[in-house]
Amino acid sequence: MSITVVLAVGLDSWQLMAQNSVWRSAGYIVISAFTIREAIEHFRAGDFDLVLLGRSISTEDKERLTFQIRTFGSQTPVVCIANSSADCNSFATATLNDDSSALLRSMEEVLARESKVYTLTQTSLQR
Image (cartoon, rainbow, N blue to C red; front, top):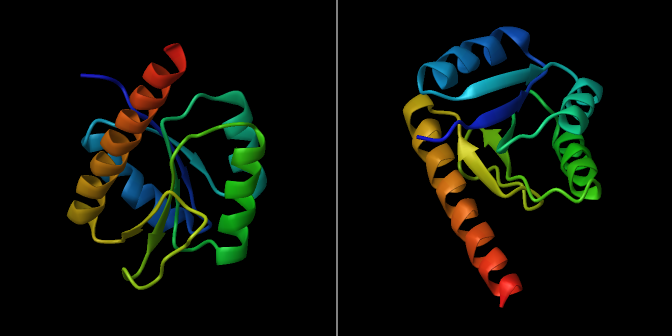
């Protein structure tokens, strides 16, 4: 089993810490950031498999942070957590519902899908 490192970003510290405990119990290593600036600093210094943007962050800040991540040349999946599936953020890899069990399943699906895309891309480049 591989280790998955997640950068979880949220402005509501109570909510983020509650979600972090669920993610950690599911086997993820979670690094928390409570500001956009802190998230950028963590991202620059770390190697993350997934970035989760909490629903407490404005759409503009989610988009700005995603843009910053992409300017580093990173293809790390950026997932926005929303109150409903209708709240879709087109700049993100995926927008997931805030339901705990559905969120965990969806995180796994995004990671699996992105891993396949990465493997196919690397295979194509090697040919």
